[in-house]
Image 1 (cartoon, rainbow, N blue to C red):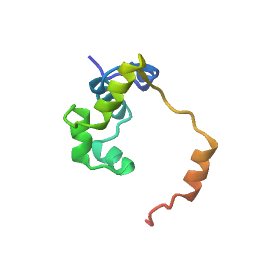
Image 2 (image 1 turned 90 degrees about the vertical axis):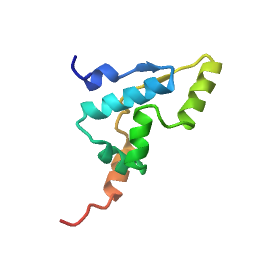
Image 3 (image 1 turned 30 degrees about the vertical axis):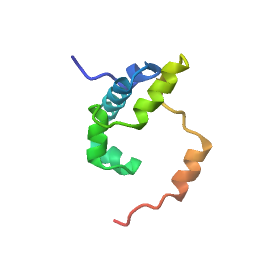
Image 4 (image 1 turned 135 degrees about the horizontal axis):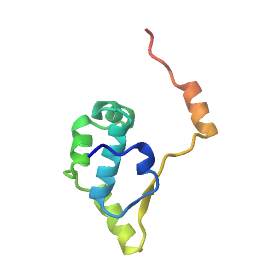
Amino acid sequence: MTNPTPAELIDFDIRTPRRLARTLRNYRRSLGLTQADVAGRAGVSVQWLSDFETGRTPGGSDRVAAVLTALGLSLAVHVRPVTVIDAILAAHTTQPDD
């Protein structure tokens, strides 16, 4: 079995914290990013991200899933379109000196 392509993960219906974690992990891998890459960009530790991706991090995602379920809702994951704010933020991001 091969890893899903990014397109296969678009608009995926998320109903459980485990599915959310698995979807994000598979998408990260399909992009060729390491946990360290994503953790650094997200401002979380690599250990936290690893725990989250394997379903060992309690808290936030469990509560979100419970509220979604109680309301008869689910979460859909899709690639966010590039917006004007992305260009503004990119222009103000400081690049490290080489």
